Length: 201
Ligand code: IDP
Ligand code: MG
Image (cartoon, rainbow, N blue to C red; front, side):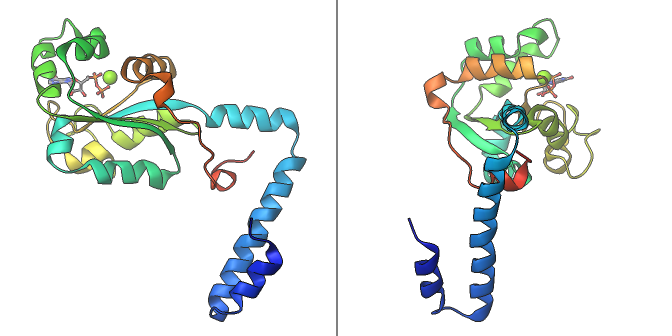
């Protein structure tokens, strides 16, 4: 690990602006880590528990074909959520029937399955504080005609049958969908180094 004194010595070779920024960063992180240790255990546990909420997001075949995967991932990263699982799949009617089981009686059910199996999906699990509700807002209404500009559907789609992205609609739904699409071993528990700056722990 780089010691503060060595760090300062190295910094002497850089411009004054880089020196100031780097020093603020170094001592800011160490202060935040010390402060984190002083926080009440109960509060930290509750905050960390909330921060571990997870949801399933999928870029649908139209989103993949239109090369929107990067922009959609970018929005979730930019908001401050943590990616804990990701894969590209060609989904079967079997898994899609289970995923959309509640819509089985809808007149568009068959065409929905045909569309969703027409090409690869990029399926992801995102983690963070209030991620289920926040991601539904980021995605926008089911019908893109009603989704405001600034939402993914409002910015990238026009018709309800080609609305680019899926997001779980509740915490219970998210748990079921995550179990349907991922094995536990494929979800990574990793420490995100900016967590102390995105939630209060
Ligand atoms: P959601 O994706 O916003 O949660 P749901 O009502 O769960 O919306 O519907 C699942 C998906 O079914 C939608 O995202 C859309 O792809 C498709 N869908 C919903 N309503 C219609 C419709 O009226 N016509 C065609 N497809 C629809
Ligand atoms: Mg839904």
